[in-house]
Amino acid sequence: MKIKTTTPFLPFFVVFLLVGFWTGRQIAVSAQQPGPVENGTERPPIVELDSAPSTPTPQAPAVTEALPPVPSLPPPTQPAAEQPPKPSQLASRQRNLLVIGVDDLGSPDPRLEAVWLVIYMPANPHFMLLPVYPSPSSALQEANSPSPDLAQLFHLNASKTLPAEFLSALEGRGLWWTGFLILDEVALSDVIEFLGGAGELSSLDGARTIASLPPAANDPQEALIRQARLLHELCGNVARLSLDDGWRLPHLFGLIPAHAITDLDLDQVATEWQQLLQRAGEIACEYPSLAQTNYHP
Image 1: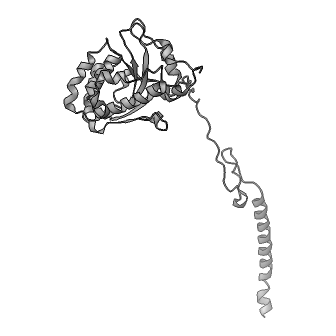
Image 2: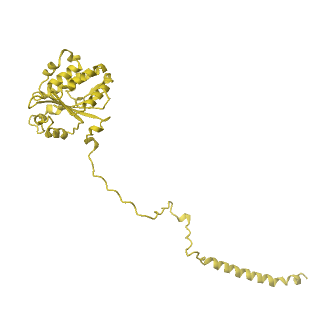
Image 3: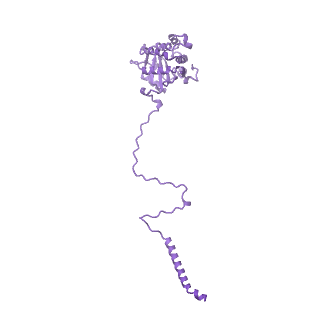
């Protein structure tokens, strides 16, 4: 009885089995065919992570517009250290004062006795003094040395200006200056008395002090030693001044042009002198090129 009741369902079961098998094959075939193309673009390929580079390189963005033209570079200039600043730019910049000593500015052919470069900053009581003539090297050089002799190149033009060959010789030694001051023996004697005798100078007046200096052309070594000592004493004397000594400066201006020549602005000199006197007790002078020589004061 059970066989008769279940037999009619067997044909239906077989039909459903065949239909399921055929449908599964159709789905498998359609999965192997490429999908439809949409909007004219293909589907991007699939990149497997284990086969991708560890650090992908991004693509450069497309250039959408032309780059602006590269401006032309200006011509090369000299280093700033070789270009002296203009006088109008010196309000708070370094001063390189070229101080030149001669025997007599009233002579048609003044004799060169000394050249020093004084380096300082405005309102700063620290000064560096570099001997140029006679210098430690020139004091020891042989008489037949081919280097130019500043004493032979020095003279004053009819307009009381320095000759081009003398200035070129200084520049050839790597020097530059923001101003110059030429003093003869009369002016230097007044400067010594202006600063007041102290120490070794207390028993000497200006004229006797100048007379004790040997000519640079005759004995450059001794001349350099005595000049360095004199400047050292004068520096110490300035440190003892006060604001009450400011009235003496106009007297020195009266030495121009008979016994002193300068291209400095005298109003600016007077202003900086007053500023210096406010810190007179802090004034110090340094001689870097003489520090390791027998010429140090």
